[in-house]
Length: 322
Ligand SMILES: NC(=O)c1ccc[n+]([C@@H]2O[C@H](COP(=O)([O-])OP(=O)(O)OC[C@H]3O[C@@H](n4cnc5c(N)ncnc54)[C@H](OP(=O)(O)O)[C@@H]3O)[C@@H](O)[C@H]2O)c1
Image (cartoon, rainbow, N blue to C red; front, side, top):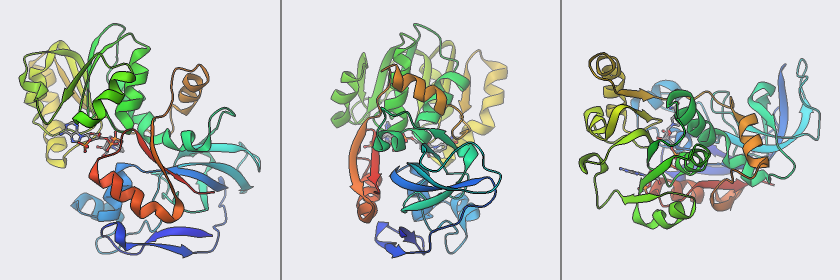
């Protein structure tokens, strides 16, 4: 099979299109012929290996994960022993970020528990866009954020994968949504239902004096105290990611803040694939449509990652594999 391989850490230039043996499913796994994949921040981090944490998890000097790509959509090609949920030919999708990655290839073996059936009306490209960003949006807004009908909500870093799903889900709660991102992405976010838009290059929403019931952040860049200023009484700040220093601060301060104030600051711990059935339901009801920025071929994965690295994308960058 063809695969995009990273033999060392570096820029997208280190990626090579190679011919590798097709993997064989272990017990509990299925072999998936990948039709589409999508790019996430963890692919970018695992490619570059710039964070000590990444090196500790993925190899100090050379990456253990040679084929990147967490999100896949494709068809089951073969079924391993003890795998009972799917048959060859079934259309499936899911996130393999906690089971070895491997989506940037023609075939990948996946634990069957990582996969959900793809609805017939959903294209493979749409399905591949959903798993990781969609789960972070659902778990950030609903499970951790406890969003309530009619709340005022601010989505920071709203123009990427998580934000574009979160914006659509928040409309189901009649939330009054303010979005923050670069100016070039704000028209698209308005069209998706944002009531107010803020260009973060022109305005710091934590210093404006406006306050929100819930803030969901894809890019934590400030101290937790800055976000507290932008919360109403009993408000919650929930982040799915951001600068590592800020995330560590949040981890240290979340308990003292909960003890001495009526506000909450929290970090989402991704539960991959937990809510794919909910995403299927929303898609089939017409309440959710993945925003796809650009579709690249497998050979062009380096370009896809380059674009992701610039942050120029709106929604999700998708790879069409076959
Ligand atoms: N918690 C977990 O378990 C878990 C698991 C997986 C991933 N993650 C994290 O979840 C996040 C994924 O978010 P995503 O898929 O939506 O990423 P994304 O597609 O890269 O979107 C992030 C958006 O934030 C914008 N942005 C950058 N700097 C900003 C700033 N200072 N203020 C406001 N907006 C800013 C970016 O635009 P520009 O760059 O053009 O400005 C982009 O539109 C990542 O941080 C990732 O590390 C967390």
